[in-house]
Image (tube, rainbow over all chains, first blue to last red; front, side):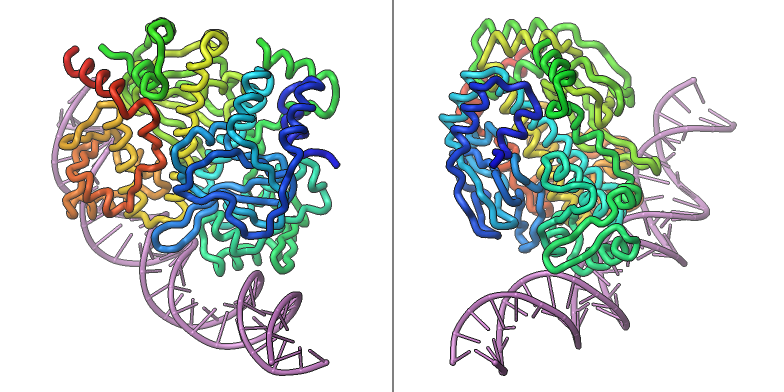
Length: 254
Length: 254
DNA sequence: CGGGTGGTTGAATGAAATCAACTATGGTGG
DNA sequence: CCACCATAGTTGATTTCATTCAACCACCCG
């Protein structure tokens, strides 16, 4: 079985066999978690980096009033910042959204990796850069898009990201979470999200089943959202072939 | 006059004299820009890193409908991601909000710096970590806070950041931008922001003058916002201690 | 002096939250 | 095996909040 962590990083930099072996080694011992488990909570002292190998997780924050805001989604291959281990205190929590297998890598191991391989450092930076782009796009959505666009935009983003890592294809894109979770992510109430989802369903963009949404027509969804995937900075189709491989190498070393 | 860039990084890692000298060298030739100038636009190929030495700037994005969302504020010492220079295309724009002096550092120089000093790499990472925390906090605000809390929260954040870099003290915190800019940052219309600002003014938290807001009572503002500055990750091993004190002393005497 | 920018206020409209009720489903314990 | 409960989804009526539209003021600057 492919290791999502290694695959993702391979997509961001041309890794040597040794580097691949190193990464596989440190991400071998994934542990299985139930859905809805907190991995770490706001206020905790972070000592490790979490890497999602399978399943979904999210970063979130609970406000004094009890409401929850989901800040970002983590899917296979995603990890929380490599240098979070250096912080004194978490400013948000991380929890599983589905059953998931997750690796925890101690800070010392990360430091070993980065000291051994500058290429890995750059790969980590790259992924972090993309993560920031996603956060910025989220801010734009929350600030200036209608609820319909906002929901559609998030689902588009997740669809593209799923396809990028090969856990979805054109015909079958399944989001394994409830409308309640979706509401916490887009900053709306569940009932209003339900109405919006209903619109998207009637537009033929979605189909709905309990606790999972299925994207039926991604291009229609993208049209509604005004979606532009430039911020995912995908290009680097490294996996596609050697030509791009060279250009990546160039880009990273120059 | 103190160099905001160097001061900021000194706050995040214990730098040697040589490292300080290096940084001063690369950030010496600041250029002066008028207010409201675009430094770089969405779609441009980024080739340099921008460092704000004096004045304010912001990242923003214009939506198809013409509305603007300000994603984050840049104040003296802030810079756009060190590795943005590796991207193919900007996914947002950067513009000045006031008259400002800004340095542009070419990518090669950055790579030189990071290859020469691991300490600098860590300092850069740290600042980026803080930036991400700010983005996450923004998402939480936009998703789950009322307009009053949202405005108050942003002004609190900016106040704390200004104090951290010594451009504001308890009694006098001046935000050099109009309510229109504020509206673009919090995702509301200018007229509604005006009503909210009115409330804060009547609560004694703010005073208002054309194109600048003045925080009159930060603790009242923080109370209204439910503000907790933990996400700014100020303390760190090092910054809380002698370095920042010393640098402030310097700034006051020069 | 006139025009631009920023600010302020009121009235109307529209969007989303709230409150409330009801369905469907799957799982659990008696 | 069924009764019950918890979770998720759905729909309608009402209220709250923010936008929109519109008018007007104050000020600085050319």
